[in-house]
Every structure is written in C-alpha cells, then in structure tokens.
Length: 198
Ligand code: SF4
Image (cartoon, rainbow, N blue to C red):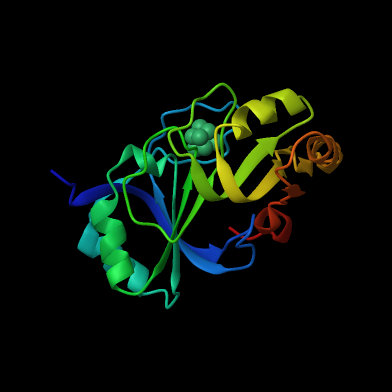
C-alpha cells in the first residue's frame, strides 16, 4: 500500500545553490533517514515529524514558489508516487536529490543523482550527476561511479571543510576527467553556503 504520511525533517524556501538549477527559487522538502553514512555528511536529517500529504501540500502552498525539490537524507527510502503526483497535479515542478542507490519511486521533472564511493546505483539516467569530492578523491573513483549512469550534466562539487572549499583539487580532477573520457564535467560550488543562506 502506498504511504499517506512521510517523515519530514524540514520544509523551507531557498534557492537551489548547486548544479544545473543554480539560482532557481525552490521549496525544499527534506525527508528524514538515509541508507548511507558518508563521513562528511553535514545534513541533519534525523529529527522528523510524520506529515500527511495534505499537511505537506498546505505547507508548501504557503511559500508562493512554483518549484519543489525533495531531498534528504535519502528520499528514495520512501515510495513517493502519491506525494509527487499530488504536487505535480497542483502545478509544481518537482525535483529530486538522491544518492541513486535505491530504485526510483515517484514522478519527477528533474533528477540529481549524487553517487557515493563503493556503492551500486539503481538509477541509471538523470538530469545531472553531481559528485562531492575532496583532496583524496581519485579519477578512478569518479570513473567507477559515473560509468553506471548517464546524465545531461556532470558536476564535481568540492566538499567544504572548516569553511574552506578545496576548489583546486576539484578543478584538477575535472581537467583529468575531461581528458580521459567523454562525459563533460564542470565545477559546481555550493553557492548557498558561500552566500550564507540556508
Ligand atoms: S547519502 Fe547524503 S544524506 Fe546520506 S549520509 Fe551521504 S551525504 Fe548524508
């Protein structure tokens, strides 16, 4: 049976700070829980309130914003068919941010997959692939992740550490990647963090 409630960590309006939709005003619906434990994860998604689809739609409707991104944690832990079809019926553009390891269960206008090291993907095509990298990330690791999926856009996103982004390591990786394979990578900065907005 499809769920009528979801564990919602937070719902807030901001702008998309990364990737192809950079600068797009969006309402983020952050769902609680994740199937991975990335050491550098900076998202507090543990706390949650169980919300009905109607409660979620009522809350989203207050923001006067036509775009929604469902994020996490890992939103694909949940069957999202009902909530995404309801949001699309209301006229919203619905995006998804996922680590890609679980099958897609929902209707989306745009999908961002952020593969993680040593994981197998269950989603094989996307609007964008955005990979978080730091100074220890190797070209081989990225090739292993990206060989499992095709996308319209490919990004490397430097991980922030103590307020610092290691852009140079990411730029060097992009140079190497674009020399050795055909998927064209670009740099994606976390502009919301640089701008000091949520
Ligand atoms: S997949 Fe995303 S939410 Fe889950 S642990 Fe990794 S960074 Fe955090």
